[in-house]
Image (cartoon, rainbow, N blue to C red):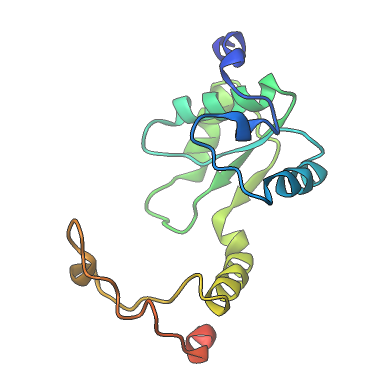
Length: 158
């Protein structure tokens, strides 16, 4: 595999904080330790089929995981059913010689994402915006009136 020959260009697991532009905070070391406990220090990537070309994305993700003895999961973005054809993608992945460690779907994480959103909203780190596309359009649109408007009611909208 070509990527295996160039693995020296990747940082080793747990060393991403040494790369240019990485922001180190007071909590970075603690977060890295927690992450290492969860992953067992093993590289874990996911292959989300993208418009840039499935072959390129699966090669990078699987190659990086394989270079460090990790795993690569195939994750379907089933939130847009017109965008993906699961069987075609899986056939292509197998034709390229890759076997996903596990197959997941974006919709399987909706409840967790919702719960995290509620936490962020309660902490004032996120908000529910009701602007339409036209109001958000432009290079520098005006700030949303919803940004500083908190209502517990928005947390219970289905």
